[in-house]
Image (cartoon, rainbow, N blue to C red; front, side):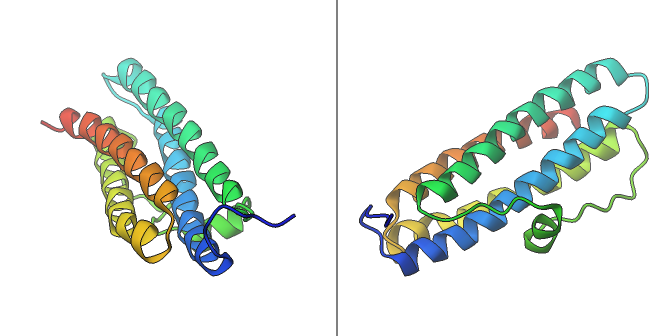
Length: 157
């Protein structure tokens, strides 16, 4: 069945390509946050274990909503590790020890990378691709990442 939402197929395709990259970034960040939750060590273990858990729970919801946005505009969401690794702007590699400081620095950099990616697409979604819905959606998502980044940054002060 055709998708008749006031956005032509070429524009929906262009938006879905960018959303697929975003979904891949979210998945990699989610996995890295899970890694931090599972492997953090040190005197602040318990509080950081719980902190990372709260962050990955939020990222789990974000991943689902990005995938559903892709489906909403009539395309299929990537859903394999291979596709995520080929689409992501992030790296899964880490050189950090398993202390909270190292995990926080790396996760913060990834959130900031996602924020910049989203910010770079907000206007093109609305103006170039005639998709105000996705523009609005990613604006809210950017604000969520800004808050998650702030919470990470606060640990580094």
